[in-house]
Image 1 (cartoon, rainbow, N blue to C red):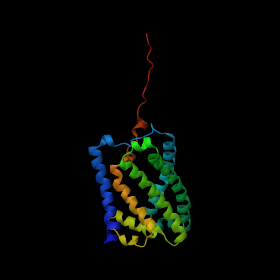
Image 2 (image 1 turned 60 degrees about the horizontal axis):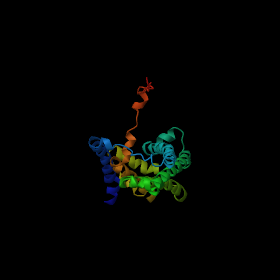
Image 3 (image 1 turned 180 degrees about the vertical axis):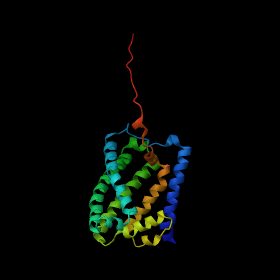
Image 4 (image 1 turned 120 degrees about the vertical axis):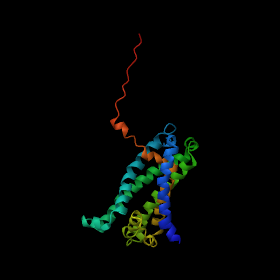
Length: 226
């Protein structure tokens, strides 16, 4: 029963909350759809942490998409052996994971350590920062520790198949039973952050100002006094 809840019911609850929560937030709180930047209080740590986090997180997300959504048979058909894939995941993913973790650590430290920033932070801000830091850390630990202690473990033969079974609404939770605990925690807390997403500052991710690209220039004219 516990496995059924953790690997079938809980993921669907989180994703349903993610979708419905965004619709509700957009319809009822468009003015709160913002990152609530604290740049005017402290800029240096924010700039460094944000830069590192965003540089690292994009390759990390891409790696997750490939690792979870693309069957290993497809990469093998393209000539990518299991060893090559594993080395890329460990070293490439590890590098960008460290960059992401460094950025998230700076941002989290800044939010907790600087009194002026902490005073402007809501409880959800502190929770989200801490949770993201933990998710990145446990993800890095999962890959590194498992490659040392359980080199025979291949998440593409368990977690990836389970994840794709969720996508096609034919969940097979049994694939997650023998998965190392660190990977299980990474997955569960990853779904939890999706459930929290609509109710936190993370919604600003969807507010990319694409209209600025095609917007007309704003002209300023100097006023001449007579």
